[in-house]
Image 1: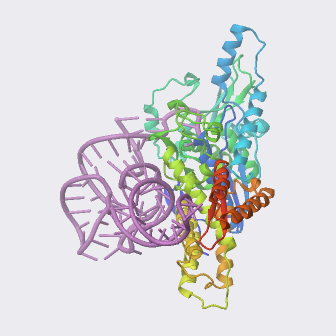
Image 2 (image 1 turned 180 degrees about the horizontal axis):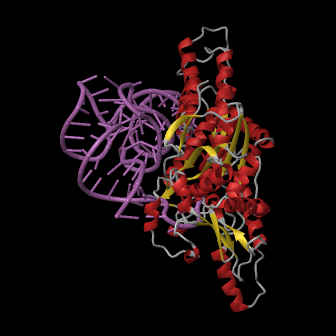
Image 3 (image 1 turned 60 degrees about the vertical axis):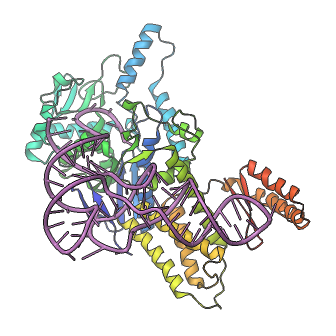
Length: 496
RNA sequence: GGUUCCGUGGCCGAGCGGCUAGGCAAAGCUCUGCAAAAGCUUCUACAGCGGUUCGAAUCCGCUCGGGACCUCCA
């Protein structure tokens, strides 16, 4: 097997992946902020890193995959709006923050499930790690890189930058950051504008609040990831992942915090997925162009021409390299839907292909298969190029269909080769890319019913009673089941 | 304004110096009672202009166009 290379955002280079502890990988991925519903854009990192997680396991690594739930601190605005409304209308409809958090956490898990994302090894919550975050802040204070103002604690970026390469990950220079003229909350409390909050004193109307050495408040955004990654993966771990839009300030701040506490950068490899765009613009709240996952699945959105299944979306996302932007479009999604179906149909064929080793082996054909299979590994090893993997699978699809249709002579492949192809195809389609048969639940007893219909139809056709045979096929099609008369006289069916 | 990325055929997208991915769409053919599926074939592109090179979608420069980040953001 070839060796894995990954694009490290920290060095901006493709590097050979070498875990700190041989055979083991620690991976931290920034999880969702559960203050609202997830949209299509949110699906990308979780599918991307799910495939990375799966591939690392496929390569034999023991992986500890930590993905947090951000359930504290950032509801400031929402909280305030809610407070305003409440103060106007009285107090009755007040939402308990944890109620909100629970609701959206459940919804998030539901979506992850539908995408067939494996569960992370640990899914820590920010609210469950207030103590660890306070500890870390105290460490930073005693190291002299933080300061307290009015019950809030800030990180002294300027001092840090004098000693460490601040801005390396995001390619930012501290002087440039001084240029920024934004009125941020608490800006007047900071010594320098580029300082960021480690802990914020809670104003009276702020609902989520905890006791701390500096008074009642809540943790800053960046500290939770530093605290939780350190706790579960150690002072330095292998992979840190997330969306590109988190590089600054989030990941840059994480690096600063961890460097002060643990004396080195938290992660060796920083992996960032690119954005999903709509008409070239990033999907996001500020553009008002986001499509919620529930809407994707139901088709209820002005931008959607139809509903798209979780697997179609997964396939759609994997058809592009994770570091490229992916433009949303109905046509593209429809193409993904059809392509995915083709893939599954061929996979079904592959599993049914028989072989007869007694016939002359077509070594050239075997070689084609072996090469195509080997290239799958090479593509994944090249910074997880799932687009190339899919292209590779489609060349296999073409060969499989050729065997089926007789363009390539069947029964000329050795059992050994056949088994290998079958194993690779299944490993990639199901285990690594994590695609699953969305109609599996419909099969089972339905298959037996269909077999009966096929039998009846066969009898009708034998009597040239095409009215009956067409009726069966047409009615089934209306139910989303395609019945196909194969060349060899067999009848097959597939689900739309 | 600063930093940075990108412009590939009707659409979506790989590629990162030579071997002109792939999916979808379109057209023709084969197969078929008719379909569907599949196979075969066709359409063969790299924003523009220069330069480097035996050779560039791929490297360099300029021009045009579009993003992303600098604020919460996947």
